[in-house]
Figure 1 (cartoon, rainbow, N blue to C red):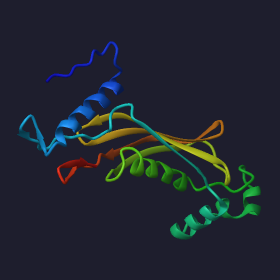
Figure 2: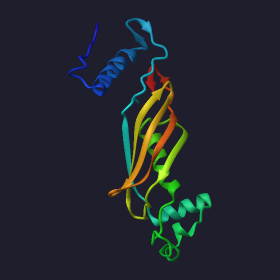
Figure 3: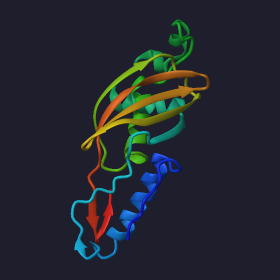
Figure 4: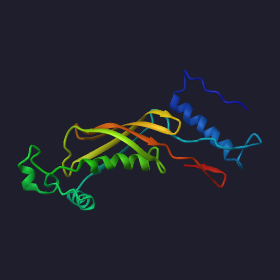
Length: 182
C-alpha cells in the first residue's frame, strides 16, 4: 500500500499532518508496521513553521509574588509613587516575568512537555504595565536533530514588549504500551 501527496495541491503542513497520521496509524497497531517491529520512529509533531501562543494579564499580586520569590524588590515594579518619578510613570511588570510566558508556551503547548530551554537572546523594547494583556507567541524557525531554534515575541495592544530567539532541546518520544507519546 503506498500513499502519495502531490505537493502542488498539498501544503507542507497538510502533508506533514497526513504523513504523521498514517505513520501513527500503522505504528500503533501492536508496535508493528507491515509485520516489522517498530523501533525509534520519531512522531514528534514539531516542524519548521509550527506556532503557539498564550495570553495573560499580570496583576499587582502576580508582580508582588514574583518579587517575593526572586528577591527582586525594585521599586519600579512595586511602588506607585516611585514609578511616577520614572519615565514609565507607573509600575511595570518584571521582564523575567514576561519571559516566563515564553517558557510556559514552550513547555506546555509547543514543543510541549519534556522540552528543555537551552539558551535565549531577547530584547525588551517597551514596558508592560500591570493590568495590560500580553500575548506571547513562538514560532519554530530551524530544527537540527533534537534542537529547535524558536523566534519569540510578547506584545500588548499595538506594541512589542519583548522579542528574540531561544534554543530548546526537543522532548524525547517515549513508548508507553506500544504507543508513541511525547
